[in-house]
Amino acid sequence: MSKYTKLWNYLKDSCLGTETLTFDEIYSICGAYVDDSFMRAKHELENYGLSVVKINLRDRTVLFSRNASNMRYRR
Image 1 (cartoon, helix red, strand yellow):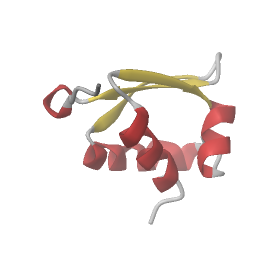
Image 2 (cartoon, one colour):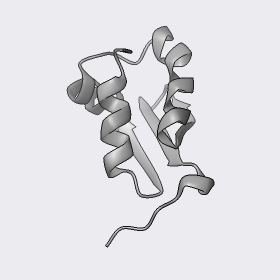
Image 3 (tube, rainbow, N blue to C red):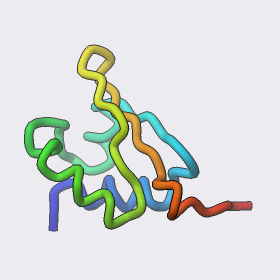
Image 4 (cartoon, helix red, strand yellow):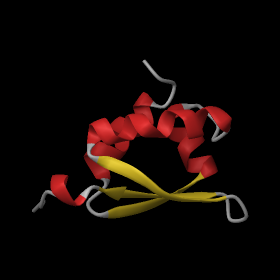
C-alpha cells in the first residue's frame, strides 16, 4: 500500500473531469508530502482511472484528470 493511497481514493470519488490540488491540500488528505516518491507513485493512479496532467512547482499545485475511457457522469 502506497502512502498516497488515501489521495488516490479521494480523487477516485471526487474528481469528475479535472481537479487541481495544492501541495498542502494533498498533505491534509493523505498525510504525505509531494516529493520524489510522488513522481514514482503517480503511475499507481492509472489503476483508479485518473492521471497526473501537470505538477506546477512554482504554484505548488498538481492537476489531475479522469481518463477519458473511464469518464462517468454523476447526478
